[in-house]
Structure formats: structure tokens, C-alpha cells
Image (cartoon, rainbow, N blue to C red; front, side, top):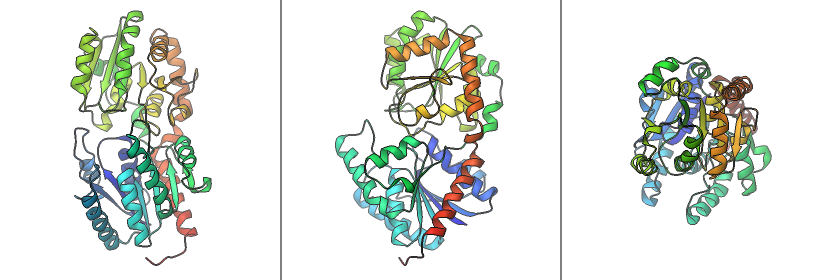
Length: 390
């Protein structure tokens, strides 16, 4: 099987890690011919490009592929991508992310190449300006005819796209985003070592959040809930893992609340080190207001940590009330604080919910299982699609 994957940026993020595992498994486990086409991985989020190179993958950079909308540059990107695909001659194209998803699907269609598109998070979503929301939704409706199948990282994504009139139910397959499960079962560094480096002692109860310090990731809601939590659990510490443009803004607000000593910023952490930080936590909070199915939720559960999450998108599929954690209304402050206090104040409850999560979700989030199912989708698409002239 000869596959071309296309993604807008190979930054450190859930969709990018998912894609990289897929490409790596195809190459190393299944012996496929596979390339990964991406725009420059620029920005404070960090990049996975070197990891792809170190793994011996066929990484192809497309300078014209940029995240921001730019009509003339996007047209140049389309023609450059067409030339690249025409030269590579893949059996199937697999697109990821919004920009690459639109341009990549159109290029594949123009060349008569079957195409699959992964929805890691809806292209149109809460928090977007109205003009962009409707523009992306219309673009997705148009791009629907340019691909044969959708792969969604959670059932909620398929439901949202179908509700928007995009595709039919038989065109969707949900495949949970894979990861290196064994790394989360057994960290490379001890919990006590990591906590000591961060200035956390045995008496502290740690609430962690792993996400870029960007809009829509919801750090501000956890910060605003912190005074209530600290009042009832004075030994609580909040650990933010990730970097981004809002770091100073968050630090300023935390200082205004007089809670600087309760917050720890770990900064940007390589993906293979994230497990060490999760094991140093006691509770993992997910307060994003938009995200397909955040990888940190199953990662936390596989580590045996209970989760508190806003009730958005795919979160209810893994964050199950009184079984693996607590779901609270999106953007809530009081409900968020109440759930976190309940967990930080009860170590036995944390242990029980974390153990439930590890038992329920370890197997189905293995990246090998994900890639095997994705390759089955490729095979079904190739078997069903007649040869079409460009």
C-alpha cells in the first residue's frame, strides 16, 4: 500500500502525534510505502519534525502550507501539492487538519486518487468568529464530495458533521487516537523524582493540566476556580504542562489572586516525557472548550489518574461520572471547583476511579490497534472505489 498523509503543521499536538504514529506504524510494522507531507512546523508549540526524521520516515516539507488563510498563497499551495502527489503516485491520500484537509482533498480529487480524511477536531467550532465558522462549515460541505471516507477520533465528531449536513452515516468510522500505551503504564522517571524537581512534596495534592497555553484550551477557568479549591484544600498545587502566548497573562492573573505559590509552570515538554508528569499528578483537569477527544484524557486514565473534564465533544466517551472521573458543564467555575475538591480531598476515590479508567481504556488506545483499523478503512475504500480518470 502506498499512502500519502497530508497535515498542515507537524507541531507538538494530539492530531500530529496521532498522524505520526499512523505513518510510523505503516512504515515499520506493515511495510507500506508512506510519506508525510506537511507545512513548516513553526511556533511556540514545538515541532515533531525531528522525531519523524529520527524514525527514518519520508517527511516532505511544503513551504506554501501555512495555517493562516491567505488566498494567493493557498492557491500556490494547492498546485504545489498537486505536483507532489502526481510525482509520488499514492494509492490513497489521507488528509488531516482543516487547511490540509480542504486543499489535500481537492488535490487528490483532481488527480483521481481515493482519499480519506481524519477529523481530529471539527473545523467549525465554538469560539470561532461567525464568518469563519460558516465559511469552514460550507467548505467542509463542499470537500465532502472530494473524499470517500471520514475517520473521526470520537463519535461526537461524526455526530457534529452529520448534524451540519456533511456526508452520510455510512461514510464515517470512529477510531480512537492511538498512543504508546506502555510508556503511560510505566513512566521512565519516578513520581518522587519529578515532583522533587518541581518543588512538590509528599503533602501536596497535584491537579495537572496538559495543553498549549493558547485560546480555547481553558486554563483561565481552572485559574478562576483555584481560589475556591485552595480555600478548601490548602495543600493543592496546580501544574501546567505546555507553553504558549498566554503564559504571562495567566501568571499575572494568578498573582492578582495571590496564588502564585500554588501554580507551577513546567513549560514545553517533549511528548515522550509527558507520562512522567502525569504520574507526578493526582488529578488531571481538562478545561478546553473545543477539542475532538483530547489525548490527555485517555493518557491520564491509562496512568491510573482520575479526570475532571468539561462536557464537550468526545470527553463523555472516556470521562464517565463516578467511574473514571467527573464531567462538569463547559466554562463552569463553581462546578469545576466542586469536582476537583471532591477528588483532591479523597485519596481512596482517586485510586478507585483511576484504576477503573486504566482497566477500561488501555487496550483500545494502543497506536498499533489504531493503525490496523485505519488500514482496514484504506482497504475498504480501495476495494469499493472504481478507477477514475483525473
